[in-house]
Length: 400
Image 1 (cartoon, helix red, strand yellow):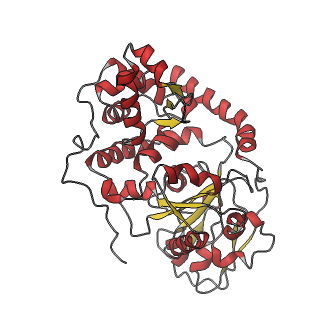
Image 2: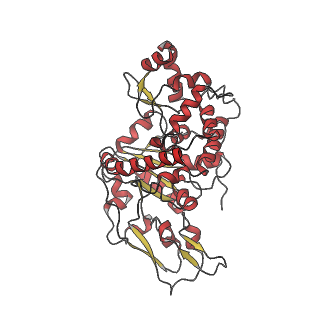
Image 3: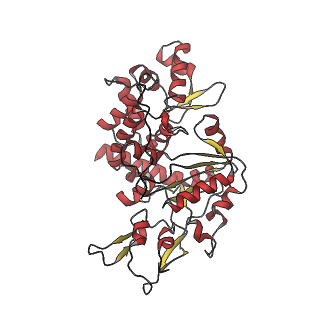
């Protein structure tokens, strides 16, 4: 196996000198920001030393004094933040712009007037902070950010939010198989998803980048995160991804799939606003790791197809278990057989592609989640389960 292409850190200039400062002492403002990020409404982790450390790492004491006045998911203009912080707006606006466009830990929305807000730790802040087309710009600040985040993620708080929420993502079956799949929807084929659109952006996978930063990366391609249609415009404008052709997207996805990656996409069909997609591996992807490590489906919906085995053909070559990104196919303790766990299967078909004996095939699954026509419809249908989950997490934290 080829060695992974490791991330080159910018060690020639200190992170602080490059504008990536952190706090050495926690202030009351840092503690208030922790409360915002830990909110179950933001799918937040419970308050902890790690979360406080992450907030201190993201914001200096001066920055925290302003960020404490940014309500989550409700963008606020610099003038309002300045009034609440009792600071001149001429001093406040440059700090907020620095957090939005250099550190990328605050979201800037609109142009005139520009407004600012904080997003959930994940999905949101994690992706923004690490997204870049130039890996050499990632420095020791990003490395420590990834290390603290990995500790928070590994504690498993996302499992609390995953059991009843409506899935936002779906997995596309392996490209080699889609032509032979009976009953495949057009939305199961990447070419069909891309067809209506003319603008695309390609960037580096934040999950795989983060794992390389913490020394646990793999050798699979980094550049296969895609924004489709109008959704590509802001990330291209911000310099977070590069503009590419449709064929470049397809080539990147095919290479990633050949290296054992799974392609997922937003669980909508032909939304005029476009879509997003990444090609992920079971060792790095935080969505797939939720299944393999915590046995919950996270944001991935029920598969449209499932593998069916012809036991007479199986030679127990173990290649299917090696290809499976979620641990749905595992060797028994004596390694004499492969055990299939349906609840862990995402229907990617990589096991079928890997099987040299043609002992596996994909067949249409039952009880699939119907695709929604827009992101708004998807969010609306998921709202009741989201609010119920939020209430349950809040109650557990309050009453144990």
